[in-house]
Picture (spheres, rainbow, N blue to C red):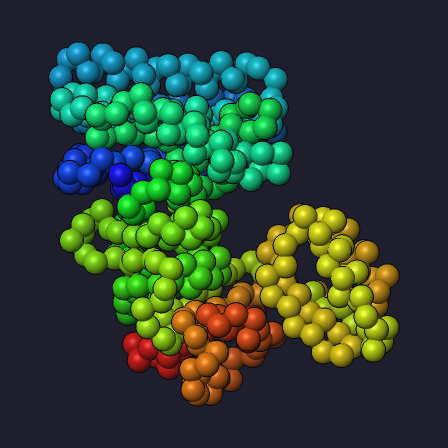
Length: 440
Ligand code: ASP
Ligand code: MG
């Protein structure tokens, strides 16, 4: 059995949904299809939730009406047969009625999660009605019946496995299953989610739970590219990556794959394929345990980075200093991406500002603290790159006189990271494309 996950842009137009239908019915192997919401939907739902949270009911109401209108247009060109038309209209009415009822209830965090869950519930049920209209045999298995997270918002892979396999057992001869990405239940049994972009994570957890032959992530680009195609002119798809390389790239900015989605596949050794719905015959990127080749494969940029330097003469010859500093970040649930140290100072980077004032206040008890906002992490990723001859020379030759705030080298064999001010992002990505890959 395999898993095929389709993102919002692969579903966002009725014609695209029809293409997806061809793809999921093409092979002989049984498939679990994991769907995101149609493109733009989750953003719209988040906006509706935010308006409600701020007490702006009228605005929320308008946004709900606008979204419903979009769905009306969508279903009008997707569904044709009269029996199915009635069904799909009832479905859309049901979900938008729910949103309109929520308008009248006093707002809570739990309601917010109910609101954003509507996107995946709608996309899968719409798809199911379309399949039914086309007489394509399938079963819809609700993610809320098997996908769950614990008190720390971590997926409960053990229980997901048991529940999902029980559900599949009920339909032994079925070959096509449809389910929602992103949504799950939390430890209180409420509707929750795996955070934005979490459908990839759902797909990987499902693939791990059923020991799938492959976890296919279908998007609108031919796999992971060697550089950011939105910034540099010429990029090429990377044919193969190891899980470790893919994890570094996903974490450090390659938007194609949710960073957390690597570990379930890696732990259960399920190959992951990144494929393109617009060009199904393109090779895409295959991610497996072993890297097929040595050397630099790609660069990625992670925006919105804040660098913090703590300088203290107390660090000199002291032990336990780093622990005390890290404990402050731990206390405020803020993860550190990069670190560099000298004998009297340590610099770290974080990617969220939520608890920055409290963190800085506590750090100041250790010494002089300096903050540089608007930085970007540029990660150069590949297999064994720290052993590749001349790599550092080539890297620094490529970037020329761009100022570098931090360098992280040797932390893993797959990554060299540089921290540079955000205004140099485009320039450095272009220069690396030329210098490291020979692409203009
Ligand atoms: N629909 C959700 C989002 O937009 C999950 C996903 O697409 O992966 O974040
Ligand atoms: Mg995505």
